[in-house]
Image (cartoon, rainbow, N blue to C red; front, side, top):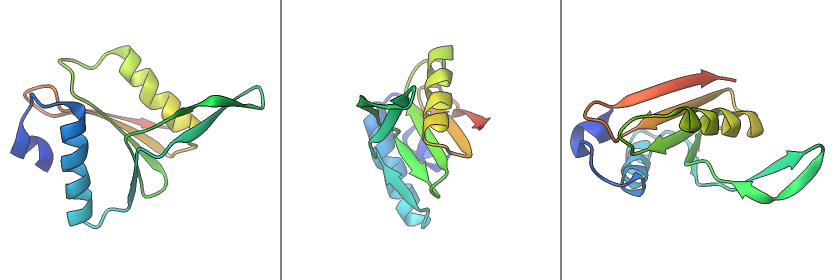
Length: 107
């Protein structure tokens, strides 16, 4: 919320990632940024990796968007990232609206 209050909407997703990283550091929140993760299909590891924006506390996927409105494809992405990462929770945060919007998915 602090990032959105300070920057508002209108920047790219990468700007919000950078700002959120500063906020995590200031608040001593443990995180990994854009850590590539493997995906398996029928027990076979795929060559393609997925890269969540952040993983906090080793169990929370944080996926950022900077779009006019969240769509089902964004929700599916956050949920799938959470499942593959075996996370407890996935947060989908949209900085693209005048008020910060977020959705929480329990895995």
